[in-house]
View 1 (cartoon, rainbow, N blue to C red):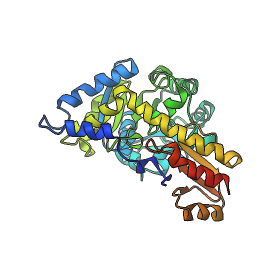
View 2: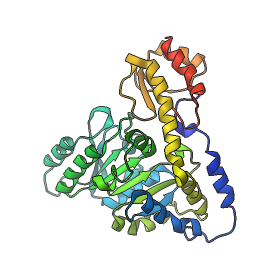
View 3: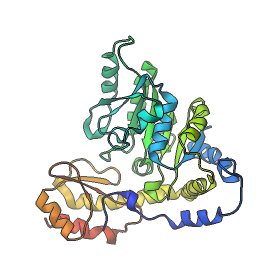
View 4: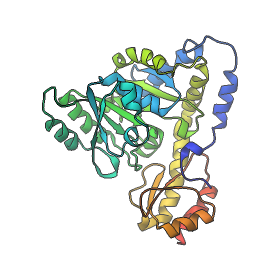
Length: 333
């Protein structure tokens, strides 16, 4: 009865099958037949010519994307609750060679265009202040809120006016798309996104994430950075096999829909305890220490999220029968 993270979920059987099928002999690193297909498959998915590469972690995907957009003396505007600020142990600064994360506020961990514009306007154009080079947004956000295509486009418009690159941290991109119901292109490159960290591990993968460049020029040096960072795995075909298995027949979307539907079961029971609308597979609720202890004694596992608050996360492999006991326990508090 684990609800503390979708990272704790099992690997989808089709991913396991794909790994077994890839367990032959082929060229090392990213020269194998499977890896050669990756950019083409993502180009088909997004209906535009992209360059895609695999990495083992979301931290690497985010940090490599930002390193492609930002020099060591520059900065990246992101939300103060962003994963790249709160949970990646300084990795973006390490990968970029020292670029600064420039933190902004915003309800539900979402950045607004006016906030970005105001931050930029307050920075003097001289050598004594860090100049922003990129913006990073998270979809779904750290509080489970989803950016619509129009919202992304509005952020992108400010980025264009300010000559900033736009990165999307899509650790739960699948969950966002399952909610939006739009084409993947509509909320990415058509809305002005330059690079996407496309998450698979939280959604049924084992150990593979994708870095998708809609601006292919950004990918050129990233191949070198990936090697230098220790993320060019010698048996890359096993990472590619996972990603291709998830993309086949929209398994990535089916898994995300299942997780999102589970979150709605809990949301219905939580009612006025909800701190934010439930738009993906994360639920944030008001919960006293006594109530939290009561739920834990009953066998439920979740994160405390500040005083009097908790975060619950549903996963692709949790059925309604798995989730309903927690919903009933919350409703009975």
